[in-house]
Image (tube, rainbow, N blue to C red; front, side, top):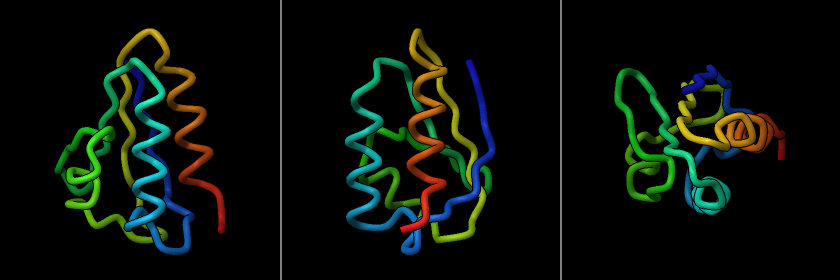
Length: 85
């Protein structure tokens, strides 16, 4: 299991379209992936879970991945969240 604290750089945060793209990326991997914000943890492969966190730009989240491709998950999803639009 790997964990990484990441600051969301996306202009709109993880809302609507970026959230859908993030979930799409997360579903490419076999690992279990979670996002945690302010103590609430949701499945990163669930659009409803992700939207419930209301992650805005500049906010810190914790990415957690557990599985055979967890390192790839961390690299890809961190890069996605860290990009500025």
